[in-house]
Amino acid sequence: MFKILKNFFDFCTEQDRKRFYISIVLSLLQAMFEALKIPAIAVMVRALLDGNVTSKTCLACLGIMLVSIIGAGIAKSKATMLQTQGGYGTCAQKRMQLAEHLRYLPMGYYNENSLGRIMSVTTNTMQNLENVATRVVMIVCSGLLSTAVITLMILFFDWRIGLILLAGLVVFFIINTGLMNASAGMAKQKQIKDSALIAKVIEYIQGISEVRAFRLTGERSRDLNKAIDENEHANSAMEIKLIPFMSLQSFWLKALGTGILLASVLLHLGGSMDLFTCLLMIISSYLIYAQLDNAGTYSALLRSVDVCVSQANEILATPQMDISGEDITPVSCDLSAENITFAYEQKNIINGISLNIPQKTTTAIVGPSGGGKTTLTSLLSRFWDVDSGSVKLGGTDVRRYSMDSLMKNFSFVFQRVYLFEDTVANNIRFGQPEAPMEKVIEAAKKACCHDFIMQLPDGYDTVIGEGGASLSGGEKQRISIARAIMKDAPIIVLDEATANVDPENEAELVSAIEALTREKTIIMIAHRLKTVRKADNIIVVESGRIAQQGTHEQLMAQQGIYRTFVESRREAASWRI
Image 1 (cartoon, rainbow, N blue to C red):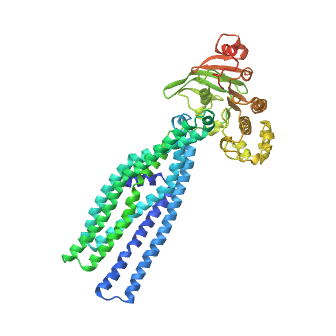
Image 2: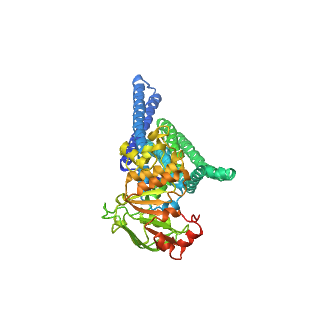
Image 3: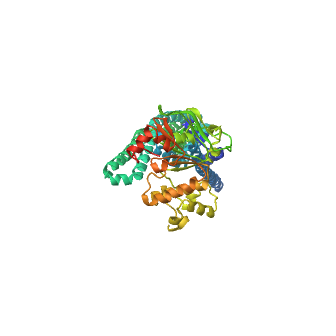
């Protein structure tokens, strides 16, 4: 229990940790004020036994009670406020820390870890910590502190009852340890099932059009229902497994209170305890049960708190790419690779590729699907780091650049465009949040999307759905190009940018790409012949190696993959940008 509490406080930010520590001190004050009820009762009991109840006695008892109630109330109020600020503050900072950390993880991380798991940690896990964990932690801390104060007070009045109470607390903590151990594996399983459920919900919603088109609604629903059932089973199993321990805990506390009561009566009847102390011990036994029962009940959730903290720390402990380079401005935008290799999950993807891409030239990368084209562009732009060899920009290894200074030199237009649930204008100015509207409109006109934007309900202030769901594929592509134009990077990477565009939008999209790529270094993964043949250099990649390279005319003049591709079919389905 105490180790879990330590892990939680270590997880908190420094400022919020101080808030929690202050709230613990206030909880201790609250416990001391609560414990004043015993002296207040003692004053009245003594007066009743002596037959000397006066207005002065009543006022003294009332005064102590008021101090107890008001003091405890103020301390609790302040402690609760600090706990709330600490919980929400920590989780807000950790969400931003997680987002910043995820930003610089190798792209391979997102293949190894499902979107559901990442989303579960950044949403459910953080929400559990801010809404549940802080309350659980502080209730447990408050219960333990209150019990400690009352125990000391009982030891002061009668050491024998105090020893009985201490022995009972040892048994209680043994039972509680069993409760914590029982919840350990179950809490982890619960989090796994939570992540799996989120992944299935995301998959179902994102693929709803395919599900409908192929009439797979029932089958996909079964997968989703299975995930829901497994999640329900994991939660239910955890509760069922913990109920016996929680019941035993509660029973033991009641038995402990009863034991203190009986011991007090027997000691009094035996003549070794006066009636005043006996009555005081009987009343105190109920106070002990109330405080410790809360702590014991909520301590079962501490293991879930520990799992939440561990999941967040696991992501934060994932090694980032080395981003601590220098802020370098390249002397040129020449891009080169020297004998680079790269493997993913023990499978070689790139095998000893060397190439040179002079600035302001167009290089097309073509080849069979799965040959390593996209991976090669990812290595050139340092989405991944090479296993061996080097990639250089302007003659300097890309690993010497800080990530931000390197990314200033690249703009990307992908086949699958992602737009944020925000206004059209903000999606275009994504790389330059402070850019004036005039620049946004200028970029939109160059990207041939100004006209259709003006036809939207609120023009540039129209809020588009998540992922740009309210726009067509061609419209999303052109907004993506406008975004790249706004960035105005010297190197443009086009990854099948025109692959899925309908003929009506193709002419405008090609025009938009021409506006984007004018006087730039262009690296394109392409499968359309008319896009490829104008390139200054065509690189044919097969099985992670360069099979051929040259201009369209040079490659057509020699036997090889490229010529076979062109002659057999101009738009082979297996060739991708």
